[in-house]
Image 1 (tube, rainbow, N blue to C red):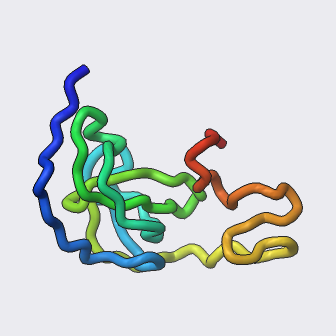
Image 2: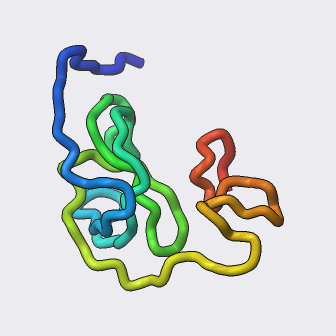
Length: 107
């Protein structure tokens, strides 16, 4: 498999961690979530291409990687995850990263 890469590509990321976002196109079109991080990697809908994008935590807790042009600002309708043992995204009961944001494992 050949992967395309642009070595001197610059990009301004308009979203920051915690910004609400709506996915505009692709497999998760119309889903709402919160930006977790800005990345430069392969995405769900463009697996053979490295591109600037975001990790977005959807309302159901799924974490997806989307290109920068697949998201727009949005209003989040779900409350943040709270409860016993939840602090800064770490679930102390399970000793694991909350909602599958640990990329070493699938949840």
